[in-house]
Image 1 (cartoon, rainbow, N blue to C red):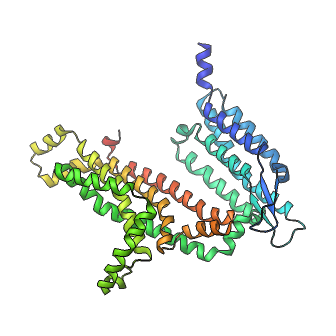
Image 2 (tube, rainbow, N blue to C red):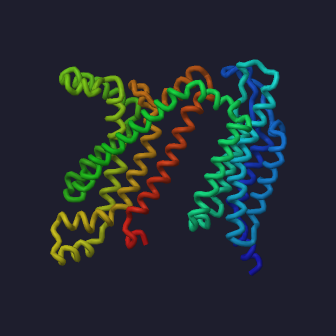
Image 3 (cartoon, rainbow, N blue to C red):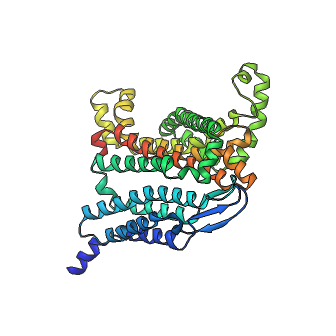
Length: 391
């Protein structure tokens, strides 16, 4: 009985997160001081963060305690406090280290975020998963801590020296173009998902009604998914260029071999498989007895589709849209090779210049966008799903 009780109270997730954080804080470089943005420099430990080093140690200790807390509520509270606290403290620690190390350096010297800081952030994310189910029950627990952490990070930029970090300086230099590239990224990926839904949902519905169509639709969309992104973009350049030259109206609309058009077509094609397949599976798995009951009540085929089949299939359809959205946010970066303008430009410019902070300036927003879209569409799917189906 005692062994079972100890096993129940022991939180392995929080322990793993604490160990990961501990490794990042002790065994890996926290920041790197470089003579300029391109040349490697010298690595420095968390000790250069001053008093924030002790705050980090305290939060790691709290994470370790959360692994052996006696109740679920205590584990949730301790893991939440340590996870969110680590993110806030990390921002101030990076700012303190940057301000300290840049004293007496030239104006082109840079302080980059080291691998240890990224590992600490990873550990905080793992700790945050511990007790997550308990936090989901309360809206204040979901929204309050992130708002406080955001306020702490913003204040670190304003007063804590976080703006001295090389990543922040890369953003400052490219602030105007960054927002334009971000808007272009969102527009292109969003348009690809929207067109994928416009074509994919009817195709999925058609596949449930006709067995021959089912084999063709699922087969073709599956083949498209196996074609490498760059190869597909290259294949689209010539036909779209010919189409734009043949139809001046389309050329005026932007349909050319180079630009956003081949990227949009490729993204739409990549969005089809998850949307078509999930629509087909969702509609095919509707209980025939439910359909027969609706038909017995005098519903027409259209009414059955709109009032019975689609509501029951909606969770899987939304899952397909979520998968397609996250997929396209990543693939959109590759459309820069066809002439589209988005965050991929920053990534590939950074690769060409061997500038890691410029790469991060393009890659980190892509990661954040994917996570935000994933969470938002999951919440939207839950909201749109009828309560009876949700249960």
